[in-house]
Length: 215
Image (tube, rainbow, N blue to C red; front, side, top):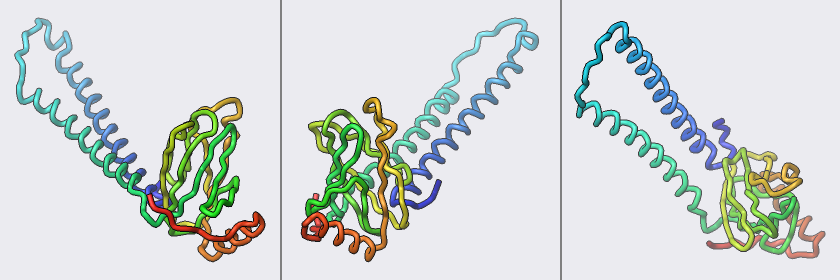
């Protein structure tokens, strides 16, 4: 956790810790209250039952406090979601095609690969579509996951400041060989990426041009 592998990693991890901590506090509070009530109002201590009137203050507290906690979770989740939908205009646009059981990536000049190569510190937009069944584009290290449907366009984006190789998986069961539907994204230094892109484009008889795309 908190690896800063992408621009979303730390925020998603922080929200996960926040929700886990709140859940733990609530669990401990409820458990302690249950134990207290079992002891305090046991039959041995209270052999004769008594009618208990309502307590407005208590009812407001046990309604208001959980409501505020849930609203805070929603707020932080909504802020994170908005960031994930705010795709920069200068993002490198790559078409991602899912099919049973592989990924393919197409760059703006038409270059197609089965592994994703992108430069470091560059926002990357992936336009997602499926050739057959439902899939899910998932980069665990980047905390990026987006469903991929046939006959429907979807998109996501990410930016990484760390050079390295990161797994790409399908997170939606898509058939017999679903577990083999793996690829990778390589985050490269700009010069290394430019060289790779030029060589790969030349080999495919394509112009080595990355045209900036807008949403």
